[in-house]
Amino acid sequence: MTAKRDGRFITFEGIDGAGKSTQIEALAAFLAERGQPVVRTREPGGTELGERLRELLLHEPMHFETEAMLMFAARREHLAVRIHPALQAGDWVVSDRFSDATYAYQVGGRGLDARRFDALESWVHPGFQPDLTLLFDLPPELAAARVAASGNHPDRFEREQSAFFTRVRNAYLERASRFPARICVIDAQQAPDAIRAQIRRIVSERWFR
Ligand code: TYD
Image (cartoon, rainbow, N blue to C red; front, top):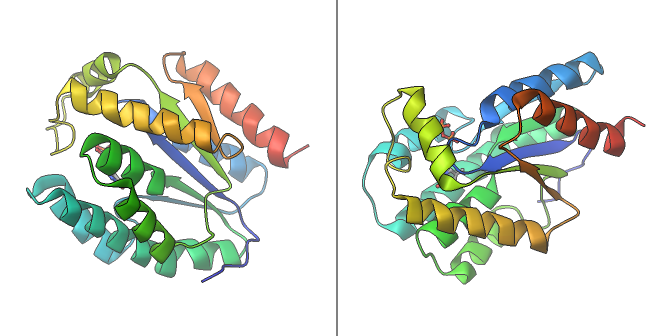
């Protein structure tokens, strides 16, 4: 399952409340200004089936290994139906989360055996990773305050305690130190304008010099 990689695949990661959404929009607009066709998507979700799985994942209690497998089931569909075809067509794909989230939330947060993660990842996307991952990092207390201020009804993950998000954050950072060429850590405590400028810089240095 090797895809021809004409387009670029960029993912956004971070604990809930890190402020990814506005920056995803800003990056998509920046790429469009540069004349790149952009597909914006998210996980879990991104396909009709994936969005149905998302509903279950966000709201239905389940065993933590079921959760991990459903994340990867949704991802398998997402790769087949949207991500690979878009990249092959030369589009840039910008996704709100991908497999690093499963590592952080299911392995780090829930305690899934990392070997189970490796097995699922190498089944679902052997040899395939994002070209660039922007990891929004901030202390869980600040992120929780942002989630609370949003006024949205919290989902199954957002209702977790701060110890859970500390584990998720640490797992993300561990992954970033393992893949430093791919994963850029963004200090999400900065003002939105500063974050936007930093992301533009990172993307420009890689691809628009
Ligand atoms: P997200 O879309 O960022 O949430 P929201 O729409 O509330 O901003 O992600 C949904 C939740 O799913 C988030 O709490 C993280 C979790 N998640 C996992 O636990 N594992 C995964 O593999 C993915 C993709 C998401």
